[in-house]
Image (cartoon, rainbow, N blue to C red; front, side):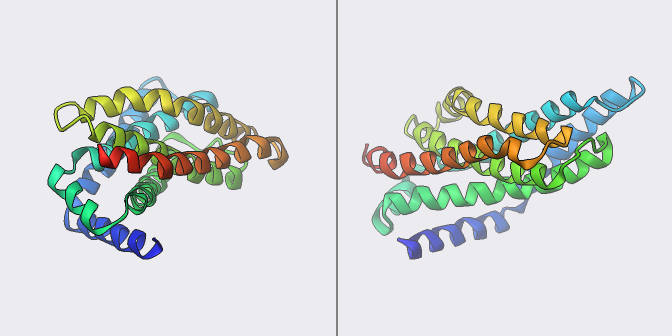
Length: 223
């Protein structure tokens, strides 16, 4: 199993490197939305207040995650999925996709946060807490959307993308509620102990999504 996950992950990374324009498009989307937000606030003569800064950042990261997940299983041809079926176990396929999407979203969140703070200010009081929350939040968004993308892939090429957006947003609501709360604590400079419970809940959600994906994906695979 670990060897299969490793080889599938390397395959996705090589394909991403060969198709660098897709990754560049996602980075351009993040940079463009940040710049438009910057123009909107500077035209009003100032930077956004801390609550608006926090909400806007997670909105940008949410739609970047939807765009990244939409390029996964939902857009792979049926012939490629059939090939996966002959060379790897379904559990290895879904776990490799979760790891790949998590790495991709972390690669988008890091530069996006840097540009965001450069243009829209930096109201964060506890950077360690905020950075850890962004990393955990990116992994949670990626893992949840990978499972939804696997479900959407069974709808076929015509309805997979729409189904991903429809099913993805309700699934992500608990994750968004937690990450926004932790980010607010980081912006207010509250001690780590205040955010310990929500962060443990976020970690538990990651394990739950991974376990559900591990159990359910083989059944989706055979349909």
